[in-house]
Length: 211
Image 1 (cartoon, rainbow, N blue to C red):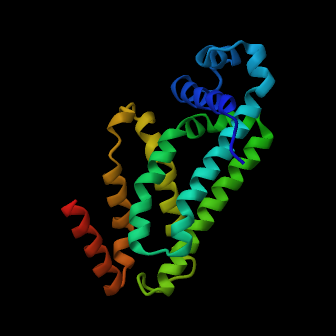
Image 2 (image 1 turned 60 degrees about the vertical axis):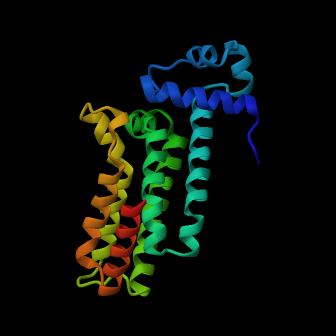
Protein backbone atom coordinates (compact mmCIF):
# COMPACT_ATOMS: atom_id res chain seq x y z
CA UNK A 1 0.00 0.00 0.00
CA UNK A 2 1.48 3.34 -1.12
CA UNK A 3 2.04 5.93 1.56
CA UNK A 4 0.18 9.24 1.20
CA UNK A 5 2.18 12.14 -0.36
CA UNK A 6 2.07 14.35 2.74
CA UNK A 7 3.31 11.56 5.00
CA UNK A 8 6.05 10.78 2.50
CA UNK A 9 7.18 14.42 2.53
CA UNK A 10 7.38 14.28 6.32
CA UNK A 11 9.37 11.06 6.22
CA UNK A 12 11.78 12.42 3.60
CA UNK A 13 12.34 15.58 5.63
CA UNK A 14 12.88 13.57 8.80
CA UNK A 15 15.46 11.31 7.14
CA UNK A 16 17.39 14.35 5.88
CA UNK A 17 17.36 16.03 9.30
CA UNK A 18 18.19 12.83 11.19
CA UNK A 19 21.14 12.23 8.85
CA UNK A 20 22.49 15.78 9.24
CA UNK A 21 21.91 16.56 12.92
CA UNK A 22 20.86 13.26 14.53
CA UNK A 23 17.61 12.01 16.00
CA UNK A 24 18.27 13.49 19.44
CA UNK A 25 18.89 16.97 18.03
CA UNK A 26 15.85 16.97 15.75
CA UNK A 27 12.49 18.17 17.05
CA UNK A 28 9.08 17.74 15.52
CA UNK A 29 9.15 21.51 14.91
CA UNK A 30 12.33 21.12 12.86
CA UNK A 31 10.58 18.54 10.69
CA UNK A 32 7.38 20.58 10.46
CA UNK A 33 9.32 23.69 9.42
CA UNK A 34 11.18 21.68 6.79
CA UNK A 35 7.95 20.62 5.08
CA UNK A 36 6.21 23.98 5.63
CA UNK A 37 3.48 22.97 8.06
CA UNK A 38 2.60 23.49 11.70
CA UNK A 39 3.55 21.04 14.42
CA UNK A 40 -0.17 20.42 14.93
CA UNK A 41 -0.62 19.39 11.31
CA UNK A 42 2.45 17.15 11.49
CA UNK A 43 1.13 15.53 14.68
CA UNK A 44 -2.04 14.61 12.78
CA UNK A 45 0.14 12.28 10.68
CA UNK A 46 2.85 11.36 13.23
CA UNK A 47 2.39 12.09 16.93
CA UNK A 48 6.05 11.55 17.83
CA UNK A 49 9.50 10.58 16.57
CA UNK A 50 8.91 6.92 17.30
CA UNK A 51 6.08 6.73 14.77
CA UNK A 52 8.20 8.52 12.17
CA UNK A 53 11.20 6.24 12.72
CA UNK A 54 8.96 3.16 12.58
CA UNK A 55 7.72 4.28 9.16
CA UNK A 56 11.31 4.97 8.04
CA UNK A 57 12.26 1.41 8.97
CA UNK A 58 9.31 0.03 7.02
CA UNK A 59 10.34 2.09 4.01
CA UNK A 60 13.95 0.91 4.29
CA UNK A 61 12.87 -2.72 4.62
CA UNK A 62 10.62 -2.42 1.56
CA UNK A 63 13.42 -0.91 -0.53
CA UNK A 64 15.79 -3.66 0.60
CA UNK A 65 13.27 -6.39 -0.26
CA UNK A 66 12.77 -4.92 -3.74
CA UNK A 67 16.53 -5.00 -4.31
CA UNK A 68 16.74 -8.63 -3.17
CA UNK A 69 14.02 -9.94 -5.49
CA UNK A 70 16.35 -10.79 -8.38
CA UNK A 71 18.92 -12.21 -6.00
CA UNK A 72 16.40 -14.56 -4.42
CA UNK A 73 15.48 -15.93 -7.84
CA UNK A 74 19.08 -16.23 -9.03
CA UNK A 75 22.02 -15.75 -6.61
CA UNK A 76 24.48 -15.51 -9.49
CA UNK A 77 27.78 -13.70 -9.12
CA UNK A 78 26.53 -11.16 -11.63
CA UNK A 79 23.48 -10.40 -9.47
CA UNK A 80 25.60 -10.32 -6.31
CA UNK A 81 28.04 -7.91 -7.92
CA UNK A 82 25.30 -5.63 -9.24
CA UNK A 83 23.62 -5.50 -5.81
CA UNK A 84 26.63 -4.39 -3.76
CA UNK A 85 26.66 -0.69 -4.67
CA UNK A 86 22.86 -0.19 -4.49
CA UNK A 87 22.86 -1.72 -1.01
CA UNK A 88 25.69 0.56 0.07
CA UNK A 89 23.84 3.58 -1.30
CA UNK A 90 20.76 2.44 0.62
CA UNK A 91 22.85 2.39 3.82
CA UNK A 92 24.11 5.87 2.93
CA UNK A 93 20.55 7.13 2.41
CA UNK A 94 19.60 6.01 5.94
CA UNK A 95 22.97 6.66 7.60
CA UNK A 96 21.38 7.97 10.82
CA UNK A 97 20.19 4.45 11.66
CA UNK A 98 23.80 3.39 12.22
CA UNK A 99 25.05 6.69 13.63
CA UNK A 100 22.19 6.92 16.15
CA UNK A 101 21.87 3.17 16.68
CA UNK A 102 22.64 3.21 20.44
CA UNK A 103 20.24 6.12 21.03
CA UNK A 104 17.46 4.40 19.08
CA UNK A 105 18.03 1.06 20.83
CA UNK A 106 17.90 2.66 24.28
CA UNK A 107 14.96 5.01 23.76
CA UNK A 108 12.62 3.18 21.40
CA UNK A 109 12.25 -0.49 22.53
CA UNK A 110 9.78 -1.48 19.80
CA UNK A 111 12.00 -0.02 17.09
CA UNK A 112 15.04 -1.66 18.70
CA UNK A 113 13.43 -5.05 18.21
CA UNK A 114 12.58 -4.18 14.61
CA UNK A 115 16.21 -3.16 14.04
CA UNK A 116 17.57 -6.35 15.57
CA UNK A 117 15.25 -8.43 13.40
CA UNK A 118 16.31 -6.43 10.35
CA UNK A 119 19.95 -7.22 11.14
CA UNK A 120 19.22 -10.91 11.70
CA UNK A 121 17.28 -11.17 8.44
CA UNK A 122 20.13 -9.48 6.57
CA UNK A 123 22.72 -11.86 8.05
CA UNK A 124 20.50 -14.84 7.26
CA UNK A 125 20.13 -13.68 3.67
CA UNK A 126 23.91 -13.40 3.22
CA UNK A 127 24.34 -16.90 4.66
CA UNK A 128 21.70 -18.31 2.31
CA UNK A 129 23.45 -16.74 -0.69
CA UNK A 130 26.77 -18.22 0.48
CA UNK A 131 25.22 -21.68 0.73
CA UNK A 132 23.55 -21.41 -2.67
CA UNK A 133 26.86 -20.31 -4.18
CA UNK A 134 28.44 -23.49 -2.80
CA UNK A 135 25.61 -25.57 -4.30
CA UNK A 136 26.10 -23.83 -7.67
CA UNK A 137 29.78 -24.76 -7.59
CA UNK A 138 31.01 -21.17 -7.42
CA UNK A 139 32.39 -21.43 -3.87
CA UNK A 140 34.36 -24.35 -2.42
CA UNK A 141 32.77 -26.51 0.27
CA UNK A 142 33.56 -25.51 3.83
CA UNK A 143 36.94 -26.63 5.13
CA UNK A 144 35.90 -26.18 8.78
CA UNK A 145 32.42 -26.10 10.35
CA UNK A 146 30.65 -22.72 10.26
CA UNK A 147 33.38 -21.22 8.08
CA UNK A 148 30.94 -19.52 5.73
CA UNK A 149 28.64 -18.44 8.54
CA UNK A 150 31.56 -16.44 9.92
CA UNK A 151 32.52 -15.09 6.50
CA UNK A 152 28.89 -14.20 5.82
CA UNK A 153 28.75 -12.31 9.11
CA UNK A 154 31.89 -10.40 8.12
CA UNK A 155 30.41 -9.57 4.71
CA UNK A 156 27.29 -8.27 6.41
CA UNK A 157 29.39 -6.01 8.65
CA UNK A 158 31.24 -4.62 5.62
CA UNK A 159 27.99 -3.84 3.81
CA UNK A 160 26.25 -2.45 6.91
CA UNK A 161 29.02 -0.29 8.34
CA UNK A 162 31.07 0.72 5.30
CA UNK A 163 29.36 4.11 5.02
CA UNK A 164 29.18 4.92 8.70
CA UNK A 165 32.91 4.32 9.20
CA UNK A 166 33.52 7.18 6.74
CA UNK A 167 31.52 9.51 8.98
CA UNK A 168 33.20 8.26 12.15
CA UNK A 169 36.60 8.89 10.52
CA UNK A 170 35.42 12.41 9.53
CA UNK A 171 35.52 11.69 5.83
CA UNK A 172 33.12 13.42 3.43
CA UNK A 173 30.04 11.29 2.71
CA UNK A 174 30.24 12.45 -0.91
CA UNK A 175 33.66 10.80 -1.20
CA UNK A 176 32.59 7.28 -0.22
CA UNK A 177 34.38 4.84 -2.52
CA UNK A 178 31.71 2.28 -3.33
CA UNK A 179 33.99 0.50 -5.79
CA UNK A 180 36.53 -0.05 -3.00
CA UNK A 181 33.78 -1.67 -0.94
CA UNK A 182 32.87 -3.92 -3.86
CA UNK A 183 36.49 -4.98 -4.26
CA UNK A 184 36.74 -5.61 -0.51
CA UNK A 185 33.80 -8.01 -0.69
CA UNK A 186 35.31 -9.97 -3.57
CA UNK A 187 38.78 -9.95 -1.99
CA UNK A 188 37.32 -11.63 1.06
CA UNK A 189 35.59 -14.27 -1.07
CA UNK A 190 38.31 -14.84 -3.67
CA UNK A 191 40.37 -17.43 -1.74
CA UNK A 192 37.22 -19.56 -1.43
CA UNK A 193 36.13 -19.47 -5.08
CA UNK A 194 36.24 -22.56 -7.25
CA UNK A 195 37.85 -22.37 -10.74
CA UNK A 196 34.32 -21.88 -12.05
CA UNK A 197 33.73 -19.05 -9.56
CA UNK A 198 37.03 -17.38 -10.44
CA UNK A 199 36.18 -17.54 -14.14
CA UNK A 200 32.78 -15.94 -13.51
CA UNK A 201 34.36 -13.22 -11.41
CA UNK A 202 36.91 -12.47 -14.14
CA UNK A 203 34.10 -12.20 -16.69
CA UNK A 204 32.21 -9.76 -14.45
CA UNK A 205 35.35 -7.69 -13.87
CA UNK A 206 36.16 -7.59 -17.59
CA UNK A 207 32.61 -6.47 -18.40
CA UNK A 208 32.73 -3.75 -15.74
CA UNK A 209 36.06 -2.45 -17.12
CA UNK A 210 34.48 -1.99 -20.55
CA UNK A 211 31.59 0.09 -19.22
